[in-house]
Length: 122
Image (cartoon, rainbow, N blue to C red):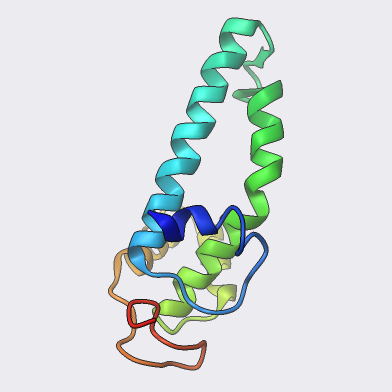
């Protein structure tokens, strides 16, 4: 869980290196819970926009964490020895999202790979 919190602080815009599965999934969990809570607050405050499916607070939160969100995704792909450009596979409807999900769930490369040392051994 400490590693996931580092994504918001030390690794805010760090697109190099590798991210373990636990770091990635804890970050996604915190991101999702935070976003949903702020959407709920926006809804009760009256600042929720139905067309955008977000409100004032949730929009500010999203803009604040979009960089670490992308960086942890890139570092997760690095852990399975894929380039960050693999994020673009998500542009392929349905299949791209499924393939990316599979990559995020795949165990990382044991030992060092071209993107750095194993995050589980550091």
